[in-house]
Length: 138
Image 1: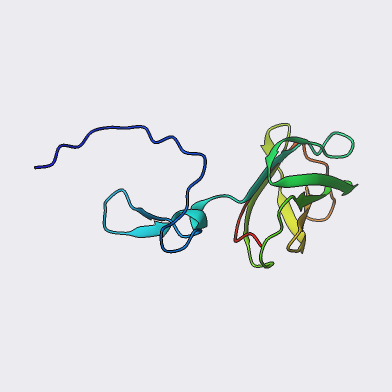
Image 2: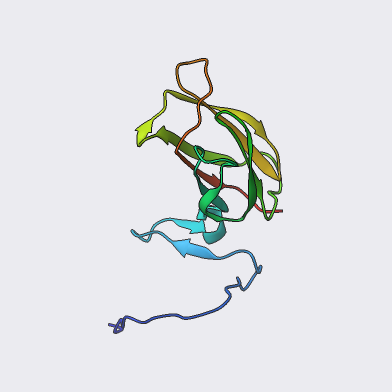
């Protein structure tokens, strides 16, 4: 039986052998595989929507935010998506409570726009807006 040893891999860059952007990972059970890059969030942001300008508390692949008005925010990407068919997960809350409804306003390869609705019709600024986006980069 081969002896398995724990190790630490330290690299600055990973590339697939067959294709530079194709790295396959085996599942925990060993019976399934997935492409590493498909499982990574390509963009994420934590917005303080109650502050003027809706600044980001922290982010990845975000070039800036726009406060379009009450409860209406646009996130612009540093690196655009290859198309507008990406997956967005988001959550917004006021003082830690989740608002009643959020509405996607616009989706584009270089940005994504969201409006926070409190009572089904009125927009409201949200203290906590968390957005995570998966999809291919251009």
